[in-house]
Length: 402
Image 1 (cartoon, helix red, strand yellow):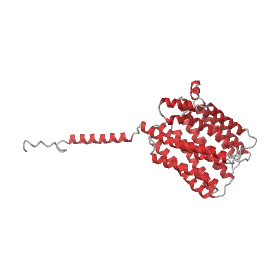
Image 2 (cartoon, helix red, strand yellow; image 1 turned 60 degrees about the vertical axis):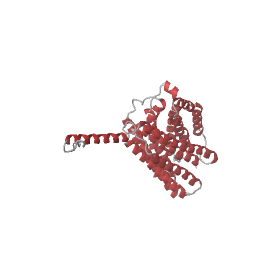
Image 3 (cartoon, helix red, strand yellow; image 1 turned 180 degrees about the vertical axis):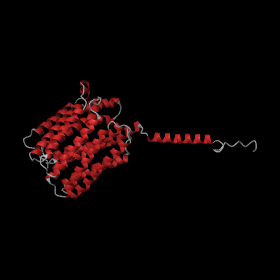
Image 4 (cartoon, one colour; image 1 turned 135 degrees about the vertical axis):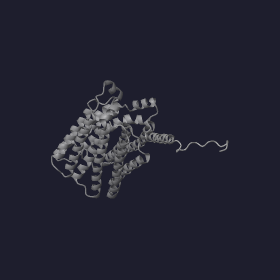
């Protein structure tokens, strides 16, 4: 070896201990880098989730506006209610339930393209069913209803994908309620598609409405309220509200929905009214799990928080009245109590929820957030919803639902 040639570094055979140390170090570095990539960035997951929700809520608001226009243009009630519920409310459920799952479980937001596909299926399905039924084209109703059904299944997949990647398990009861609600919605939409392909019957129509209204919408709201009321009021969860109690309440509500839907579909006597009364009791239990706001919290949240409570009581009252209809042989969820439930119950809860969510989703810093909360703190809006609910509830002639 010449003096100019540097000595060769020792090989693995010369120093096996050093080789193992270097291999271990490289493996550890790769594992650490992989863990860092897999660990969700809090800022990025929240930003992406909020962006996805903002887009979905914009389409939900468009359906709410279309429902208002349809109420003026259409002489019946089916089209406005369909646009409001299948379009606006289900889109709001899609966006908000997924956002809350990401937030509460500390999971990464699902891929944007997946959310876009799910949102598109709901939009095409809701709009297509409305057009097809109004134009009396059953084939269009069947095809777009199937798209809507796939949108619900896609939502279930997104919720399951998200919760499995979240490290926090405290809010699993809410996500379980969302998945149960989607399952009920699949049943309800499936019955709707079946009726579009075949002659609809009153029992199937009642079961369809119950699965969608009390299952898809009701289970979602019931699973959210105990947690979201604390968020709106800026308070802690009630001490007596434990995950076990929430799961038991959810199981009760699911059982009542299943009993009501099945008994209505087979045109059984007595069972539907008993199941509906049981469901109403479950609503009162859900309200009992909500935190009791202090005067300061009432003052800050104002009509946003009041709307959640009053909407819950209207929801319960409408279900009790529906149970009376079922006991007397009157068509279930086919008259004024359907409108009361949708307007003063679900509509009021949606109004109070969006009054909190819209300023938060807009972002823009503390000043814009404060301005947004001040804008949505509308007592006249709250009074208008409840006056409309009373007007429908005390009407001598039931509101027709075509």
